Length: 249
Image 1 (tube, rainbow, N blue to C red):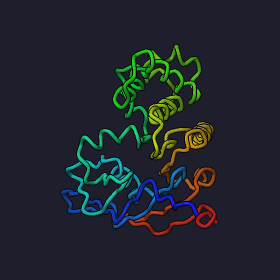
Image 2 (image 1 turned 60 degrees about the horizontal axis):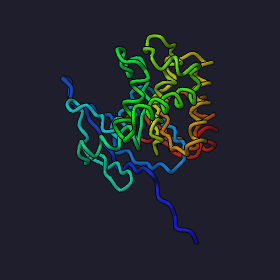
Image 3 (image 1 turned 135 degrees about the vertical axis):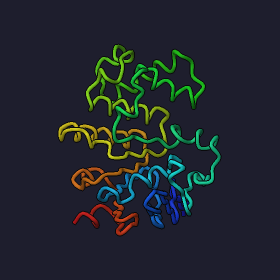
Image 4 (image 1 turned 90 degrees about the vertical axis):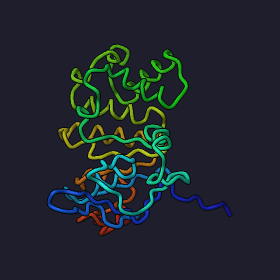
């Protein structure tokens, strides 16, 4: 009998609060779940349900202050990310675990060429020459469907459409072939046609690299075409969890 393979990511009893002038806001309340290798898990819920705060805690991006992780553990490859040192987090984040944010225009540096931004994440985690990183950047742009990647490598974010900027964010996120990709409302600002294209691209990334994904969204129609498993959040808590067919009846 083959040995059972455990989850690639485990979140246990995670609680996050924010200290405000009006008092303490309990954003995430005792949330637990696990993610298997190659799985796409959707976290769904209305605005303010704690989806994005959960993702920020996994990535070590909780703003402190006003945020505070009150309790819990987030374990990746034997490392508790909640208690990890800044150095350990820096080595994991952008390399083994990457994130696609809601608005690429606020995530991309407007003063840097997109080729430089892709190559920067490569140099941060891998010992690559300038020629190697340029070739890899061109390869990534071609992979995510950017036409004429050699020419567009030297362009700035404002020279691309919203859909193209999101493709660039995906290229940056998958540059180091991460084990886990977190997509936080990756199609919110895009029209329906572009949304469909981006989700096809995300599914293609899973097929090519075997990347496990956490897809954060409030759009159940998009979840129906992408997720293997669904986690429903409300008021900072997990209120339902199961396979896609069990949740989306």
